[in-house]
Image: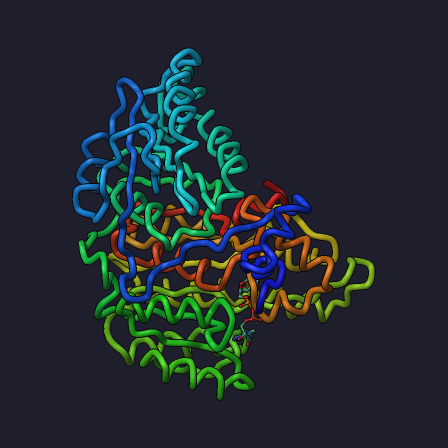
Length: 445
Ligand code: NAD
């Protein structure tokens, strides 16, 4: 799906017309380089508040990357990293102002602002917790100021013991893989399973199931996981079998043509996985459909079918998998929600319900899963360029793309990279998160 506006705004022949008319010109985002996936490079300027607590972890992380430390005020910076964990009072917040008012203007296109703070409810001191909560509003506002450059701002909230698992989220946010993740709060806690240190092929030797893998976002997820070394079991409906077979052939994956709403789907998936080996590294519940109609016109068939695909099947498959030990000690479950489940959308009461419930699935399963060394997280994509969104009427489609700080829709790979991060063993401290992958869509923000 091509975004003609984005292309014309950046084409040498037409760019000057856009500029002369004062039209917004979204920039082409820098995405992962296929020949160097997960490379973390560029110039970073890093700072900290007085009494900040994660200096050692940040320095250690940066030292193991291809990052160069920028040390002059005027150098162009690919990323600005600020450890705000020491800010305890309204007065001390001026340190944020001091740092960013000096350096934000030299942030490069497609640059990153990363702020690190405490998870407020992990702090006993109420004044400290109150002030740390302010970081959320700060990064959301910064993201709105820098989005026109294709740059993003995100916050890492460190929960108890999360400092030992900080490297993975920091690396991910610094990498090109996080291009469309904007204005998000990522909580990192004490790791609940072993973390490996293979940053290039983190999924080597691991098997991951992806539902809805024949096309769109599911296909991109399968490709990213395979790039990261995984053996992908791709599931899609029998009607999409040819596309599924081709998709799996291209990544050396295993196709399983199956309607996930069928009565025996959970058992079929479990026994297919058991045939591959004693453990399964993860499952990504990506299959989803829309059946849009305003509530008074929606038929019960439209409601029920959607609910089974988007929610009921994921619940039944989780139940069947969790009845075995396949995922124990390091397994990953990932849901695919939507910003419609956060903001709501007219004509999508069924979809909004199902996607909000996917977030509920993450919230309610995070603790019981953690006890078994399993993490569960979700993405909530905004406007992503796929066949699903190509079917949206022209004007609504344009609005969906432009109404975000980055001024453009995301690509399937943008969602896939965030899922790849959730699924990586290094993300063992990331549990119970739902991250919007929406370029800071203004819907429900
Ligand atoms: P898509 O329609 O392009 O792909 C969905 C895939 O799921 C298809 O291959 C389809 O055959 C498969 N599928 C549907 N029902 C199935 C079933 N019963 N059993 C097995 N497979 C089934 O959609 P997409 O845009 O790639 O969306 C993927 C996911 O992302 C969905 O959950 C969707 O709700 C979510 N999402 C998409 C967007 C977006 O902008 N495209 C935004 C938010 C959320």
